Length: 544
Image (cartoon, rainbow, N blue to C red; front, side, top):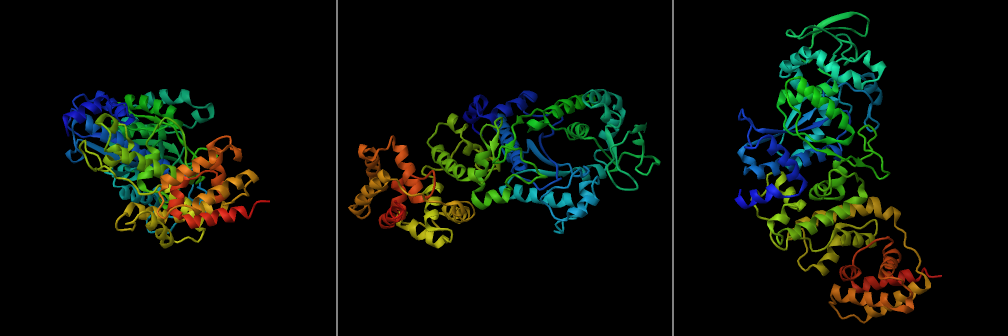
């Protein structure tokens, strides 16, 4: 780690460094007094299938963690930091998600801990929570994150949380003083900081609780069958109420940084006060805006209205997912398949710029942070110059679009070889993965909605002019030469285009069936002059 990098990181305005400086103010020497690693945490409730909203929290927290290491001159292998991915899998199931099988079985288990409900997918994971936890870990491992997975069930049942639970019982009145003013009158009547697990039904109960002996961990409550039960709150026989659980976890594990969504703003305030009541300290963190679906609605695990991680990776790369998540965490983002192509191309554009940028600009480039997220190159160096794709993903999608819904990767490569002499999976592995994804994206989203409109009379004249230019083009004409000729046609007053944008929109809508498209010179060079003339001829047949 160079002194130059440390100095640049300390003044960088990139949001991961701004967040990391919060932790540095917490520990100016970059170390805890007890010598333990600085602990970053992410939380996950496995009541539904994990989606990208879950993944983004791990990624963003990792970016802050790596930024903090840069501030203190540490490398990932130094062990100066830890990242815990915590699953609240002892929570009771409150609602059956719409997007999982065996709805009737899950309904019968409402109220029971997620880790004690059978796996509705029958996938051998032991429980509903086990299945969802496995899905999350599978992708975190695929991306290469350095994290420790921690299960609430394991922490409670093993007794790891017992000391902190006793402290909750000791500070019962103080916690009630914090929580009761925030609750409706009806909820106040049943609220308790600890939720006992019924000895008869196994459900997590929302009932009044009396502390019998804080040191022994004994509580008293009325069970679902009306009997008064006195039992231990330790060893998995109870769990803390949500906001208390969050605070207890911070204190028990010694969490120093945790970000959370805007919808948990009030919870964060109350949990912070409870953490102080327990003798601890609220972690530093970022409150981020939520992802929205294409209709502008909040993504929900129970509705399943967001993209899954696997869906993104069907159409875009891992890097593009990280790139889309990186910017402006305090601004809401729509999350649907339509954002993927732009994210892929923006990633590669930023990657190509990286090696040419001075260090202070590199630290603001998302690619710099993403490359370090999973322990990649750790100095100030950047990927080599010219590290880019030979064609954009948008151009690739347009090529696949004109080839049709049944386009096969081999057909795409045959066109690519005329444009990129050494095109092949061995020489361009990143492009090879995008060819497969472009075929999938076209099949699922483009081909079903593709509609090429008829040119207007003036547009038809311009298309005929373009056809003449192509007919006279020399073999091997460059994309730039073609682009210049296309510009010149669009500027002619006789065709009546108010701007070049209108001319290009006409080309996209009549030739490609899309409202947006690539640089047409590049597309014609890729697709071929004669093939492009055939597109023009086909469009002209639709003229009234």
